[in-house]
Length: 467
Image (cartoon, rainbow, N blue to C red; front, top):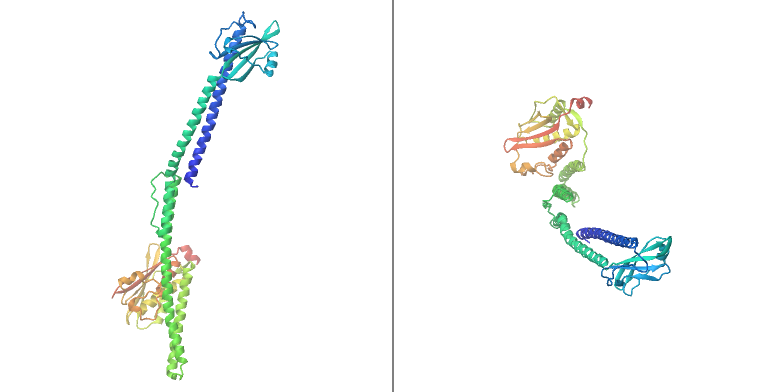
């Protein structure tokens, strides 16, 4: 059963119960009030009759009326129960008096009862008549309740038919109103079904109603779709990067493994190869093994970064750090100039070992692509509350089309594919820099060299003093 139908039935049931209770209360109130009016009229008529000076039990002196016209009937009884006199409109009908009524009247109290007749119900008011301290008889004044019963039946029919019409109307209106109230929920359902069928998170619920519960639900649902859309795109990008990573890793690992397998086959050849060739094969195999070790080490670093690598946050004094880095770089190369310009005496907030690995990767790249007698420059600068370390080379530069992909894993510029690198160094540098809360960017033009900039937060004096 749908919510719309349940709400409609609930509204209708509440209204039907309310109308039933109101109708019953109105009906019984009207019944009681009318009966009370008739009782009062009969009591007044009985008192007026018995209060008359010429009143006699055997001769009531009342005008004769045809039966039920008007609906007032009078009858007197002796104390032994015999009829003393009665009005002509009673015809042959004798007004009854129950045993309980006799007992009550003998005590001197009036008695009221309603009795059925062939022409409808009668209300009979019986009042004892005393004379000289003794009960002389009983006066009975009756009135027909036909008009009363007809009025109540009319009222009952009006209330029943009115309640039925009101309930049916409420069912129709409730169905329409419930549909209007639940229309945004239907839109949400349709949107969810469309997203599930098309896998397109661009859908939104178009709600223009008030900011009620349903309105807030629509707003929340749209906000959730926005978050899901962002998460889905990130997941797609991650899956795409993962597939590319696996494909590139497989390719990079296959090449040295194929070389090693071929070299082992040469060593097994019968007749054996010459001693000179054997030494060359062994050297080649060792070189490929070293290449595999380097590649696997870099893959492990990236795997740690992907799993949420947490680095220390400490104050790293930049000037001694960069001076030491320049000294080590000069020992690794010859014929190329390494300059350390404008090194500030400040402290950066980061991980010393991770920062050193990042800068060594950038220096290694700069030295690799800088021609002989070229220069590599290391400089620092303050950018707001950030410390920037720049490494500039005088190499051939990076093509503009390659710049957006330079930090992707296994990506190598076409001109550099002849080198022994696997295309993981800059990806590692990016991951380690971002794990320290920093960022790394590159600027390059073909023929003018490249500049890599690593930016880290500046450490406060308190941090610098405590680390």
